[in-house]
Image (cartoon, rainbow, N blue to C red; front, side):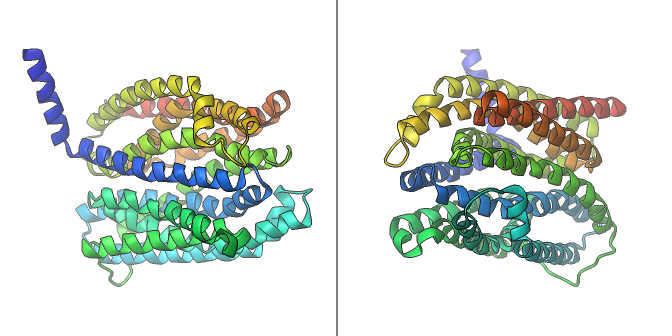
Length: 445
């Protein structure tokens, strides 16, 4: 009886913890968004299977998403801990916000211009040997998805402001607009939009995402713009952290480009097969990784300065539970890989032979779930204490290993080797990060 009472008390106390409730909130909303994203993939698979149009769309959107992940998300990551520091010390948050928005817009526009100007060079370098129609499809779609860079950048910064303000529900649910937009375009406007249906659906979704976050932020009155100040103490710290964070993200962001390059050397449909194969692992990673990562970055930022030793201990406890729970998920997903692909994707243009290929690719990707999630949490922790320099080294090691593993495994296993290489790199990366964090911990004990 006492045991039952203690369990209820434990759960009750757990739910009173704001960090736990925030993680649950983000987890639930991410589950909803990812669920709709899966439905979108079903609609896409039903419409295109492993087709040339789908291959070209993934190539067209690759560079914009690369820019978003490397430069814009990196800026958001260093923005959060230094904005928190500004809240605790300088208090001139209006100037800090204005400066950050200006930097975000400039970065977005510069890379938007670069993306447009160097499209042909990019295609000729990484995706040689295809038909004129193939390149035409890529470029046509690319010119419509490229403007997403600006809207993704602004959305990322506003989302960071909301997370710092402990608003996680709306910032997490905002991503739902892109899959909704793509589904609507496919269901109702596929014939009218033709080969641009996926590109325009993505663009409309990015615009709606930005407008939604802007409305939420304005309603919460967290946007207070003032005269920008590029020489304040915390802005200077932020700027000093950007090169290391961007370098780390750049090296990490090159990995998908490398995978696409290797897969492009294989038969048509290999790129699409890899993208289908990573959907389930990405689903699991997005739910746990985004929920935990988005909450823990501002959490670590607010607490690490006051008591680093206690924060280290909390990090290790979090990693312990994440690895145990995610390992269980891995076993289940590996065993059910083929039935899941059959149930989710196999219909119309997506055949039983596609299911066999994609399910094996999926099994290779699934292996990375524990290491990827734990690595993500460790990266958030290191970012929160402005230890971005070391992550440049780990990213460089991961990049080299990815090239080596891809080169070796593609000859042995074909497209499956590319997926396995990704998981092996993730495992090595997480081990390196953990060893470094242990070393940091010893300096505070």
